[in-house]
Amino acid sequence: MDQTKPKTKEMKRKPSWIIIAAVVAGAIAIGALVFWAVRSSRAAEAAKAEMEQMQLDIAQQQLESEYADLNNEFAQFENSRKYIKDDSIKRQLNEKYEAARLQVEKLQQELASQKHKSAAEIAKLRGEIDTLRALLRHYVEEIDRLNKENEALRSENTEIKRQNSTLQSQVKETARKNEVLSERMTLAERLNVTGLSLGALNKKGKTEKKVAKATQLVINFTIPQNNSTPVGEKTIYARIISPSGQLLTGGGSFSFEGGNVGCSAQKTIEYEGEEIPGVTIYWDVNTPLIAGDYTVELFADNFRLVSRSFSLK
Image 1 (cartoon, rainbow, N blue to C red):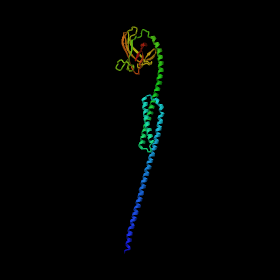
Image 2: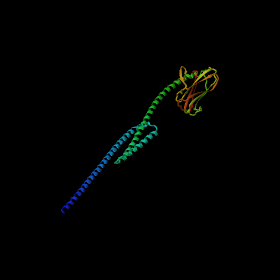
Image 3: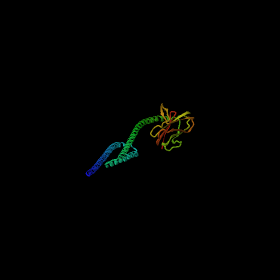
Image 4: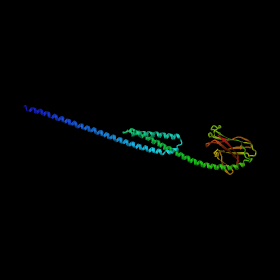
């Protein structure tokens, strides 16, 4: 009996050590797994962060390349600035572009000095470069518009030169005809004209001091008594010649010495051999007027009645 009791106690103690050893081994295994999992997670996060940073670096390089291209394009248009005559427009375009360009360069320097970039900083750089792109597009559109205007002006100048050449020919022809007309002025049977005047009127019918603001020109004169002039209906044709030698048109034309002559205005009166005071002929302004000497010529019955010059301011 006494010999069997110690063996029973020894058998009871042996399983408890096995359990403890198993628990410790399990804990070590779990710890190793946890350590490995944490390490793997950190490695994955580091790899992800490195990949994101690489993508940001690539995005920055792409933006820097875009900026360089835009700046080169802007420089190419520097020679085209001569077409922009308005200094305020030119200054505004340059100031806006320079301000945006400096902001881009500042952001580039900041990013270059940083080891790690942020998506927000890259987005800010992209926004500034988009601003540059919009300004350059506006710059190109403005220069294109001005080029078209200049082309239109060149065409207009060519047409004006052609018209001036034609006008000079007409002036010479008119001068020749005037010499012929002057010979007929001595004939006693023509209508006489006295008190001839030329004035400018505003839209209210009042006298206008500046001819450039006039809406009408008015010719005033008196037809004195002349028993040698045949009585009856008389149409008086008025020609107004501008300081540039151009006929102010609007009155149609009339037959004179076998040809047609343009006139500014005309008026029909009934002449009975008696004086007709205060005859007026109006011409509605249909072209810009300038200050200078205007010539008024009156014709009737195939005669040039009078030709005089008036200075309008």
